[in-house]
Length: 638
Image (cartoon, rainbow, N blue to C red):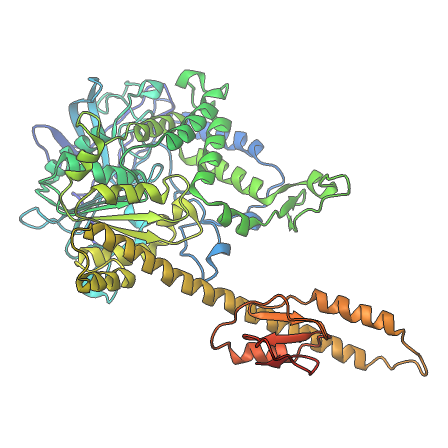
């Protein structure tokens, strides 16, 4: 992957402890224009007059965060590193860790550049005298400047796309894989949002980069609307020489930004990809953000946003992150991962605690924590190492500002005005931005198509199911249906003569979704059947071990068994057997009961296994004829 970067120069210092004088010396300049200058600092380093201020602050923060968790063995309850794709048994796949674990507050991440603009006016009317935009680029800008692709990142990510969407980006000319973001033909740009602590103007960045005595914005940092963010990014693209965007794409907050690009600059954007996002921030999402902000504000160290270095509201920010982590997941994913397991005082994970007769959890819970508790505490601790409380408040308020109808008229009409080809991707288990919000977009956007990602992992599936996401976006860019199911749906629609006056566009989308669900259901059946086979094999092995063990115990001579006791034991053993799907029983001489349908061609290995079961009742397979009943103990076929 080739990054387009300006001439490298030695990195200079940028910021110091919060609310203390900071130096921000930028090497000038490689590109310039009447409205901005491009800088090439490779990293932001704290450089106040007291050079020891920031390291001391970091030590204080590390000391404080030790008290945020208890009895925690990280390796037992969490995963780290970049997001992983879901395993075959996706419901039990590992919940990914924080892909931004190595980021630092107020520093430009490796490989990131920045540009400074002057006198930028916000929608609120407030003026930012020195607006800094941090950004990453991949690929080369062509001579016409018309191969740009703008990528929007999530709420707390940075601009390095290769850190969180690496499987989606690569050189299509040198690989059999078709990447959605092609570094051989695209000039890919990702801008860090204003308000973020990773290089762009924010509460932790100096108000005047050219003045080493200038203070940071702190709690006075203004609210940037989503439209403000797009206008700021447009200044950067103009400075870089981008004349046209081949695509605007993003997930979550980045998807909302991508939609704003298409509305604010419709003649500038060719294609649009909206992933796990919406046309306006819902009351549900606003409420979640407000609860998180109040957790921060309630921390006594917050002090109205005027906290000092080493005295940050870490507990409040960690609690906010813990709330956010749950909203990014889905109940089934969390339940499958942790299963009510606990972590004891020694840090070792144990099985789920059992309730006592009085309903209490007993000593197990008293001596430790649930694994999900320590996981969330760990995530909160990691987050305060890389994020700032004022930044979190600023960005969540930007999210709340999102509504494409503001200042433009009717919401549905605004969406209907988006004429470029659009791919809308939703996630079936998303609790934060439910699939109904993406279906709403497709309903009103005339050139849109819906693709659904089926995953148990909730909202963050767009950072987990990356291979599936890459495939559908690459298909969309190649003017192909977004999935095999969608391709089949399109063919069926082209052959349908009854469409007439019905909404063909919506009918095609609905049919594609239905076929995709069918594909998903078929895969789920295969997975469950495979699990069933494994359980049956395990059962057979256990029975073989018991049989071997019983053969070694010789019966006592002349011992007589009580027929009643023997019958009851057999019945108890029979009742304990979990009959697979498609099997039903009847007692000797009684009508058939518990009848269930069996597939037309039941697998032979299933049948062989069941025929060997030591059951005292009759076992029937398939459809039982009314005038027939097995006369042999152990089962029969009809």
